[in-house]
Image (cartoon, rainbow, N blue to C red; front, side, top):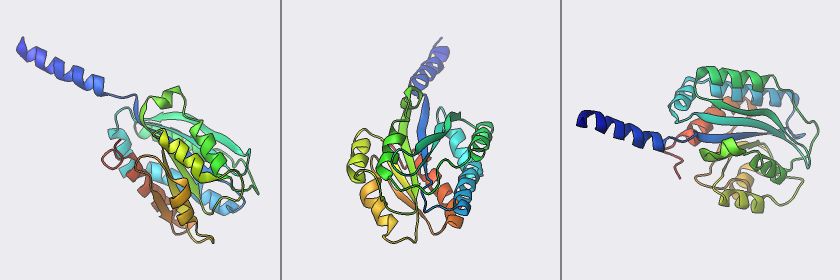
Length: 223
């Protein structure tokens, strides 16, 4: 009897510890006028390549409940759209479905301003009831420049971060004023927030993989 009861107790404790999913991730892509046609393609293909990477796949498969992910495109004020609805990824088949849905999407805006604060508000508003059940909520915002439209960014980022949502940045370097210092001081926020950099759009796949491995690893980003 004791041999049966102990495993059952262990199973019960483990079942109670299981969450609906580990991470709810909003990928927020900059499609403002600073991103040309070729650069957008490199960014899109870089994200697809990063998700299909073997290390990223293994990490997602390990995550309790998997990953909830959605994609939004953003530009100036009033120019934000959810390009890919929320999808749950728990293994290779889910990753492939997500990549196919993502790469099939067209670019939503052209010649747009860069309203980072509105992008963050939009991304934060995308966390629905299912995503709220995940242990962590993360906004991954990409960009290659500073804001030139919209409200002040830092107060919005602080407000979102104060709710426990992590805002991480993936910055393509090289512009002036320096976008890295802008993202570090005004955009990122919440638990264990960080900025990953790409030296160019051609370097985007490497940077995106490194960012995913860092933000999806519980040992690095535990509450």
